[in-house]
Length: 213
Ligand SMILES: [Zn+2]
Image 1 (cartoon, rainbow, N blue to C red):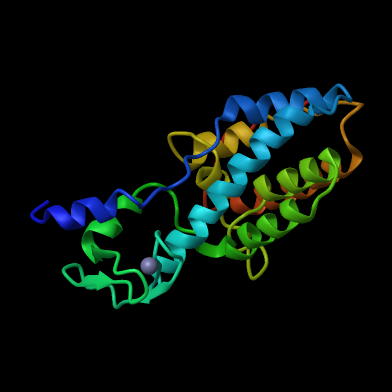
Image 2: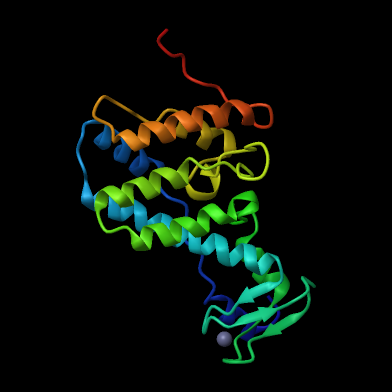
């Protein structure tokens, strides 16, 4: 970095990390035993909430509307690498190319699932009970890109949950535990997942576990 001032401004750009899959696995194992683990639901729920916010901000920035990390003001730009962008309200400034690097290759582009990330933020905020929060989490992680407008292309898992690639995270989601005591709405979401996964297999094939006949 050539300019000290820009380095300082970049320090204010923060992206929420993806969620630890171990916690998601535990969430489903617990639910399958008919137990509501309020603390774990809050933990995972808020981590996803922050992650969704980061996805919205990064996707908007990529589309030419950078939200100032200091004051929230929107800074319009044209994606020119060397353009120095400055917030008219608080004077925060950054070179677009440097800002772009902060979110590149971090699975922060919302792609064909922006509505789902947005809805989760609203649903999670409104949900009063741990059960409602659990259902919001469950709906979110089983969304597929483009499922509302065309074929479900690929799971949003890679955007939200840590893993090496789309295949690894999709296989992880496909192996979540369900049981007799699982919340009924979650079983319905699971059935819908099966159907969407079947279609998406032609774009992003995964290995599915063998099922009992
Ligand atoms: Zn500002």
